[in-house]
Length: 461
Image (cartoon, rainbow, N blue to C red; front, side):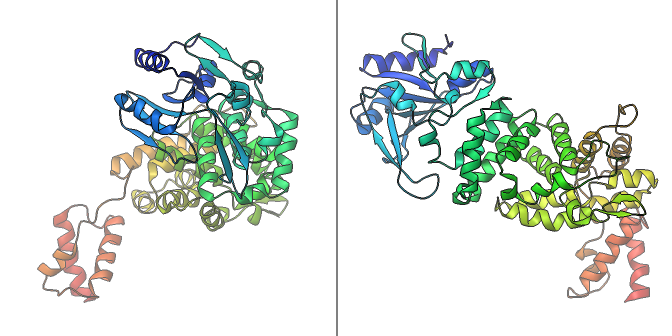
């Protein structure tokens, strides 16, 4: 029995009195068994005569939005809940992509027939709030108990290519083992070019769920490999075949290291969606340049400038899945500089090096990525209990005030004007020289900066 809030009880009683039988379906029911409570509900309504009458019926509970008559879904925000109402329906493929479906609405179809259109058995479980009983025609409850992911109907499953990626993120989020027949089915769809039908936005959303909502994203990455999806996301498919120096990376290939680093980063997520997405993608792609740069030098494996090469590759890779330029702009510097915390620590870098680094990348985010990179491996000896380079850089950058952003320039254009200069093309090189001197700690205060400027103008202008 699923405990319902007073708000939902009120809604259920109201619908019943109006001659409508509500059945809770989808994630709300599934997540009752997985222990992931949600406020997003899908409710199928049996006995509905028309969408228009249903819309009128629901108006006492708030503003109702009709999501296209072809989809037959009404949306309602009710208290803390976001609810999708729809009559039972069937779907048939008639066009290209994951939206190419014809929808048929029914008022008297049985639950098993209505649930046949769903993707996985775990999403085809219904709950009757009037009788407090579960409706499970395809064995979804048993599959959840056995940690198994199966499709409802192979014949209808292949109609929607998005289901391939949904299988990946569900397997990771709920730590499920994909049924062998599901793996074969998805591999066949991939081989037939099903993923080519998907717009980049949908691919991005599924990868986002994989990276943000799973405790072990590596589980989903392994499913990607099993289903033959990695070539579609190339050059991720090359990581498995790229070896690493066994002394620094005894875990093996770049692929193995990347998966370990992803799981490490997942345990370090901040809880801020935008930031966590940046960090997870940065870790996923931090060694993407190694396949192109790894070679043997005097008997040792090395990947010189793999970070720089990785920026170019990651730029194109990210463009294939998202138009979000702000996201990409935050990810790329983390790839470029992911090795710098350890590099600067080993070199006992001075303050000016750290100040300069802060002008290229958010140091707080960089430390997190570098820590995931550091701990995302096996160790030949005892595993370190701390990331010493990260702690060192955190303390130094915090003291300098550049943990989250670079220092603000002390000198501005107005300071040049006070020295008698007229605004023009000469301003830019002077201000650049001034900021460079500030980063080199030639001065620390505004008064010192003005004295530096006077001397610079006498010598150079």
